[in-house]
Length: 171
Ligand code: AMP
Image 1 (cartoon, rainbow, N blue to C red):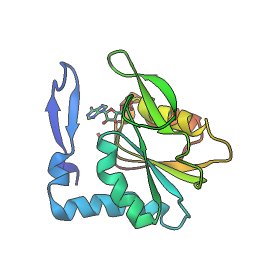
Image 2: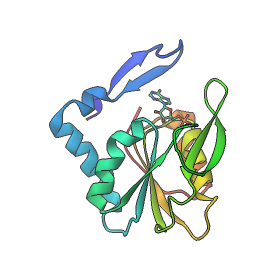
Image 3: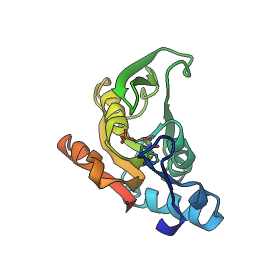
């Protein structure tokens, strides 16, 4: 699968090696392999809801939720969710942004899994963890990604918070 991730130098800004997953997604066999392999480690557990990070996380998370028999909960950018939300602000390469979740999204869900496409510094995934911590009595089972960039330290930052992670490949 790794051969199907295209590295695009200096995109979207100079110095970034962008890992483009679209060649992986546009192959029907490999798309289902990605979904199967991202679902596998959690299949022996009861997962109530998959929390999916906008936007590329949505691509796999719906299919993973379906496979796990779990609900799908979007974690969204500002001004996307119409109801009352909890939010956290976090750092991106340029400036800050926010991640939101509907306050009632987890009313019937306790055992949660976070899904995104790629783990870099871990800032985005940790924002999702912080959002979960706004709720009482929730159990975060772990977080799954297609790609880990270990040099950027995200996996270590998640380990410091005792979050189990699963990734399909590293660059
Ligand atoms: P981070 O918060 O630093 O862990 O960055 C993770 C988020 O940024 C993910 O949602 C990715 O979609 C995106 N991202 C960060 N670095 C890259 C990269 N080199 N190639 C593709 N996407 C990236």
